[in-house]
Image 1: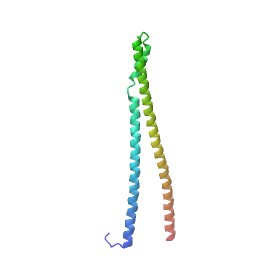
Image 2: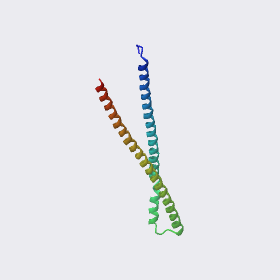
Image 3: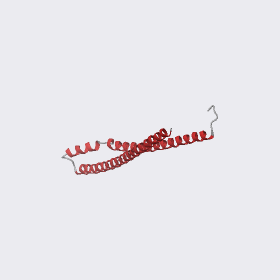
Image 4: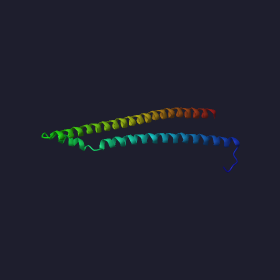
Length: 140
């Protein structure tokens, strides 16, 4: 800016900088939204991993207890109680996995919708740019 710029040129510079600033703000909002979506997805995957990796040993113990044919009544009652607890544990794991799957599916759907909207916006923007360049070249 060694030369004195006219008022119109300064206003044009300010306008272009405002446009750039708005563009960067939109991009930042998109990045924050994507980060939040990834965070939800990560939490869902961690909970499903936790449900899958939590102790599977009681299931092996149940198969051993089925093999004990000479078990007493108290041992049979204890075995039934263990099976009920194992069933509850499996139901909790199933609920956790279902919720996690639902969350991941929702986040993927949001990402796909966002991608499609961005793609449409890019096409419209490209058409406007081409139209503007054609009209600029025809004016010269």
